[in-house]
Image (cartoon, rainbow, N blue to C red; front, top):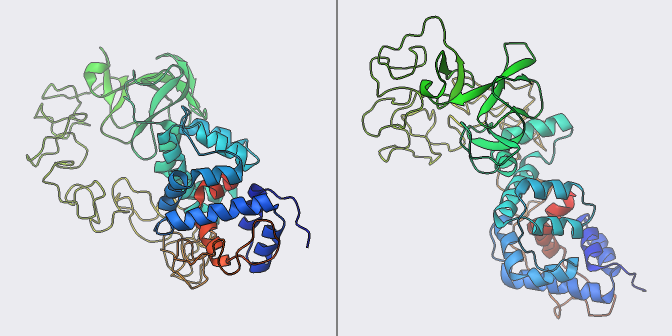
Length: 442
């Protein structure tokens, strides 16, 4: 047989789509002798250095740190380095890529933190949402399962809601997971008209665009943590965003009762007879009092019982302290008939969900809705030939015995004969997320 001229990169890309040994052999045979040598070197290094990795993330980190030269030789990129780009900038760069060389360059331009953030986001999306059949289903899945990872990538670290900690052209705003982040903003000053239906922020850092119900035109109003930050004639309205740690300065209501003169009106002050209790305060530990009026007592204190280690005390809002996926900051999961976010409601905001096997996952994200043992959050079972966790892979991360150069069936440096162990290929394609994910996001 006469070998074709595929590079190592092209051979690997071909192998990604294989599902049987004949395809594997054809992809390998299409590579040049040099490309075959590079691919064998990569597989040998991964076998020697990374075969004991127990998760995809650990395998990827090992591949980057222990086999960077082999990865670089195969894909023509060199070892993955770090740069100065944020996670959002790396993602924007990746969107425009059409090959692995471009994707690796984008990834290398990111800081170590940005690379970690984009790995976490893409891993979450691949694991939970790869089987979504429509854009709408994908978006719903992304917000349901990966809101934290998406927020971390696109908003950066938390910021000060009242302003001063975001760069020029950006403003601090509450995110879906309850934290804050800096987002691009038009920078309109407090008091100016704004478009409440805009897809990006309208107001200057430290302010938000608010409108009357069902109105699209609003006014930029200042964020606040107490009445003192609003000035004469206004009070800090903590009910606007549905949270109790900050609000916006609003026109003083005709009847604002503030018996304890702590700057919080009685309608938001959970104890208007105690000036040491009001929204926005830091919770005092050990006094069994809801000091900051957020409905919890002694949250974040060392005396807190948090059996499932989800950051919420058993006596401070966690309605199931034996399940870390259930807490006041959890995302409601459709179809499982469980109050995932401890708000007293079940499956609120969900569209019609078909869950035939009653495993808590709707058919649009469950790759086998006839089997309760197959769904996106289940652990992969080795050796059964089934995609248990609906990530598009079978038996990924399972222990295998690779074929290496010099053993039976290994390729010679310049020949076209021999075979390649398909089980080792499965580990590589399942574990080498560094390359596989870039190909997906490109």
